[in-house]
Image (cartoon, rainbow, N blue to C red; front, side, top):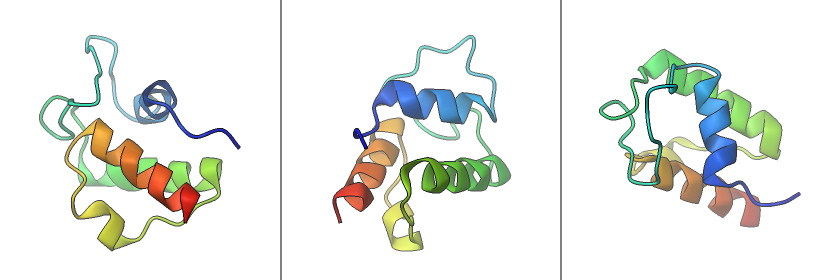
Length: 80
């Protein structure tokens, strides 16, 4: 499977929150720039796990503050 891209993650996050008025970059902060709450984040994580066949642990997510952090966490798990 190809590694995820920012575009892939933006599509997944966009299925749960409205990103239509936003310019999403790797620096976009989850919760600040991107209006995502904890329930939406759990849905996103569940979807990422299903799509990429990975398991994201709590320790993977402690440092996730931006879309770039989320992308890096998914890529790390795919390479583990």
